[in-house]
Length: 183
Image (cartoon, rainbow, N blue to C red; front, side, top):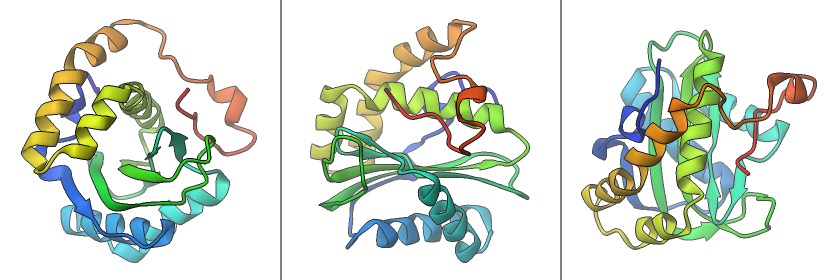
């Protein structure tokens, strides 16, 4: 799947404002349950894939953001979910800050390059401090979605016009089974 805008990955119905979570596993379980509703895949399988990915290295990227993700067989297209949390949780982020913004992604296993590009787009957009602040204060999914479109559309277009995606080359992480971190 070619990602040209954040709206290709994330729509208003994919946003949850004020999701409760007691910790990392609780947050991942809630994301897995949402993904089950959208894909028909068993939430236990989705949760296992998300937990497995976290064991390879935290998907906490700093600035209060985590991007839990996994590659799965038997899904036709990527599925995403943005959640603002009621209370920040520990997610072993590189800056040691608790996380209150989660962007979950599951992606067809047959499209690893698409996942890398999708991660690059969302990480680039969520790196913007003002957007993170606006998302945290959004009261509805519609408001959060409007902010994402405001901040993300032009950035995603500019970013994806380049033939070079600003992620670490696969050879750098292939030996550790890690996907690139947002820098």
